[in-house]
Image (cartoon, rainbow, N blue to C red; front, side, top):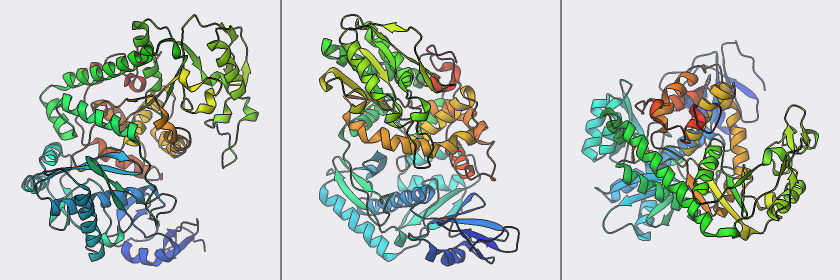
Amino acid sequence: MTANRGHEQIDVLLPQGETISVPEGKLSEIAAKAQPHHEAAIIAAMVDNCLFELTLAAPVKPPAMVRFLDLTDKEGRRIYQRSLSFLFIAAAYDLFPGAAISVEHSLGKGLYCEINKEPPLSAADVAAIERRMRRLVKMDLPLEKRKVPPQEAAKVFERQGFKDKVALIENWPKEYLNLYRLDGMEDSLYGYQVPRTGMLNVFELKHYPPGLVLRFPDEGDPSRVAPFVDQKKLFEIFREADQWGSILGFDTVGAMNRLIEEGQGPEVIRIAEALHEKKIARIADQICARGAEIKVILIAGPSSSGKTTFAQRLRTQLLVNGLRPLPISIDNYFVDREQTPLDESARPDFEHIEAVDLPLFNEHLLRLVEGEEVEIPTYNFNTGKREYRGQLIRPEREQPLIIEGIHALNEALTRAIPRRHKYKIYISALTALNLDHHTRIHTTDTRLLRRIVRDAQFRGNSALDTIRLWPSVRRGEERNIFRLQEEADAMFNSALVYELSVLKKQAEFLLEGIDRSHPEYIDARRLLSFLSFFLPLEPFEVPSNSLLREFIGQSCFFDN
């Protein structure tokens, strides 16, 4: 049935879009009434666009709108995954006291983790941790929460050997910190947890030397673990990020904040930028080593990964090697707007590969590779039509084409060119920094913050607009990019360890403009909480050719 706001009842929004009305009560009591309408277990709640745990002691008073979250909701999945990480850390801490436990990064629809101990982690050790986790789930223990001042939390962390956490909360902006207790261990992963371990019954551990993968429920069917997708090339790029952390001398935000406090922020920027330049030069060398065999260089990556600046910097390095790549824009080959494929909502899907005139694009590519002259079209975005304005190009001998776009890894885009003549590059901001050794930074959050700052400056979009559009962007990435990333000949990590300290002030100002009347308020508050961990860095230290300049402005490659 559908209820009307304004009466002395609480409206509970159901997954089917209907509402039921209930009287005043605690969230746990209201959740019990709503649970029969949810296929998956209720994990948390949103009350008038604010996130709450089910253990909230105070009653919810009418009038209010409540939406309960389960594993079909992104915030429900965040809480479940955070709680699984907590469960894993507690089990490993119990079995291997004194070992350094680290949650590193996403991998294969799960989290890659390491346990630094002697002897090294074995398959038998991983099996023992999983057994302990399942035992804790079966016991259905509460995740006990208490609020403590940061000074007291620091003592708890120090006692347990979590020195990285002590460093992180040295600049804690609030009067208290939430600590959760399970199986004799107290920790904070800086976000809400499920009420009880009994809710965490869908997971698996996979031995993945030198560490393991904590596998999560499948988004499409939360009753089972997501299929594991091995990503060897992506894993190597994350290992490279670990090496960069060793070069920089830190891998957590707390350690970086200490360097900033000591006045070493500019040096951190210089070293991070030098690592980027070295990697780009190495990719250019690999392309040149294959000589005339490489006819087309393709660059793909998700939104806000820095593809355009990377392409410019790669071009510079290729010029150093004596190659003068000729850029070709995929945008000029869009089909006329009325021919654009439609998405599931019957709206034009401009990110669909068939939004590109593939036959014409391949015909022109083949002719260019063979050294012919071609008249390149220009796409008029106002009229939605291609136009020919006499732009004639002809590559010189051994002059490769360079193409950047979301479909660049897809063979269908360049099917007229044999694979051996193509060099494919995947670029993404694969965060090289964690909050602490138990709490990772989501790579998608880094890209979202880049986009919020860029879109506000150069596209006239508010933070609300950008966050509202983000789920659609993410769906396009899953469909068009991520499934093809292992096809790349090279991967480039565009993340810069210092960038969130530079983005902090502007991003915070923009996010503060989102009030609780909007569903996006929950994302804004989460990002603001996340940014509060970083000490700021001023942008004037960032070089003009940095990938970060694509988002903050004053790039030597663009008119921004």
